[in-house]
Image (cartoon, rainbow over all chains, first blue to last red; front, side, top):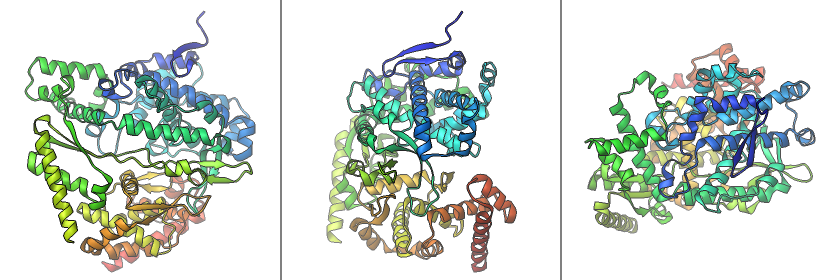
Length: 439
Length: 179
């Protein structure tokens, strides 16, 4: 007789247990593929330990989602601040446990639509306005039907998909209950996704930045009705009992440090750029069926891309070889200059202007101006004080209010023109300064 | 639209919202831009999706965040319960003064939108902006628009949906009279 509980050893969560139905999803080819998708794309070229995959991250997100669910819907925690009609009805039936199971499946599958090397080349591949979450939705609701039908305890794929991708990406209008469930996984402040990747990335890379007291934090998460804007309709948010405020501060600081030191590292960003260029060119050469391109790419893993890079160098492929060498031979562009606050103070459009100027001087193919598209931003959450009143987190914590937004816009260039580019940047800045002085 | 005009528009929008008496939280800024795009047909550079409180632009969110980081926009917390209001800094005021031609190009439409919105609550703006989405992007009108609005935002009551659709219908009619 097989084990009812299957276990995975995990460096972050020690043991992660799954039941037979969850094991079927994990054993499916769709989930197994995540064993070969790096969590941090090419970051291992910079941090050798960053070889962890989306597979174990997805297990970790399931584990954390489950723990958050148990705390949030603990009768005492829930009754104090929440009353969702659907939840209250479900609690009276076996369906409540069934929904916890749906949440666990959604957490397992939340990244199942990732292309090779995660986010690195998404913008190039997906049609405008869509991303890996659209693919995740499609895989869960279409490709995995046989898997869902094989389960002992039936699950509705659409519910799993709604919760996995959240209210923006789902094709459907989510109920209040589904929105809450989705926030447990994808929430900006305390989503299990973020909570796991900070710990996991930090562990594998070997930095201490990503660590925070997750046990205390989870123990203090509560569901409450709140509106961050004056005179706005309230909705349910994952908030925090004030007792967990310091652990939340630690989480937000962890996020800030990981973004500024790791995710936005100058070398990591340029590898993403070179990977994206290879990927786009390679897709054109492969001549995928335009109508089926996403389905075809879904069969691929990081190994296929790396193999293609090596092959294009070995075969002297005229078009792909120079692009592949940027990664394989570590011939990446150099970071010449990091744009400063003073540059922007002098010229609000400095980044756009310097890019145009340098392209004119050297050509767009030799210069890359990397803009910070998405930093950690100003994430807030409701804090439940001991008297039961609710406050905005940034009003109650000076640390949270003052965590700076990260802006690391950088200029890169081919190594052969490094010196000339720096000279031109200085020339431009001096001219800009003189112009301002004259005005 | 040039980058300069787009940036001038962002700062001018914040300025005009404040002058119209609006709270000028992030939600208000998003809704104002959406109305500018869809009602006044100004070619703003942002694409909008239907998000938690109605039409929302991730690119606009990133621009606001960027210029907060660079001290062109400041966040003002003056209420313990709520999130911040947005306001200009010396740097953004200077930018507007130095780029008057970019400001003047869309000033009239921006002011018109801010006067439509004036002190509307976020709750009200969500309903109006989503009604505009239903009518302009899903081409619904009248009771069909009301039904669609309630379908997209189940927390909106029938009388609220009716009022929102009627208001937006009036906006659209007033716009077509001007043409």
